[in-house]
Image 1 (cartoon, rainbow over the protein chains, first blue to last red):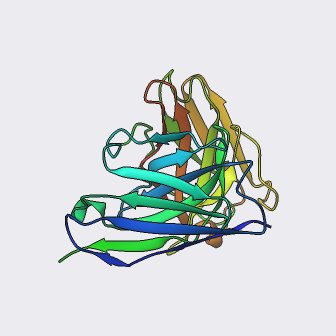
Image 2 (cartoon, helix red, strand yellow):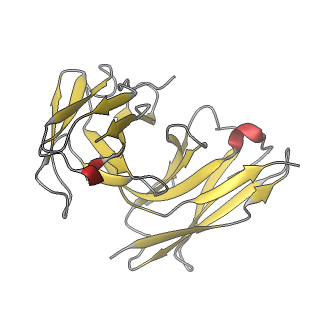
Length: 117
Length: 109
């Protein structure tokens, strides 16, 4: 059974870069798409972007200039970087395996990132 | 403002049937499959429905989904206290070239 675990700094200063890693266990990341989804405190979930099984990326247009998603096949993990963060980027960030353009399953437990000086 | 529109709240008593709606457009629900997620307090969203009406393994058949035109709905029958959660619909949007979610519906039992 595939399991996902997000990790990274819980506190990032404004204007700096947020970096998170999603470790995938119980299966290979190769054949699948992988998405990052975030949820600001008390608010709805928002899709951040995905990386396909051939390395093609697609990002939320509102974040496109600041976001990068990549994969490390050798370590079976997916990474997210978001530059020039502001308080509006404070959220729980989830990684999820994406099944084509159908659904997300499974999801990681999420990592809370707070942007504050 | 979410692209998919859901009621902010819904409620029911144990044993009742409740329905949660999700309204979109021709570029998302009208063209692509809808998925539903359940988020219990303090936890990650959990898949509840995919391809409009398919239940992942382990999801009780009390949960059912449907899609018609540019709208979708999630029905929960035999409501239980553990169903109290937030529910989100999601679909791919061909025009935005992006995943879109509803704003979520808080179900109170």
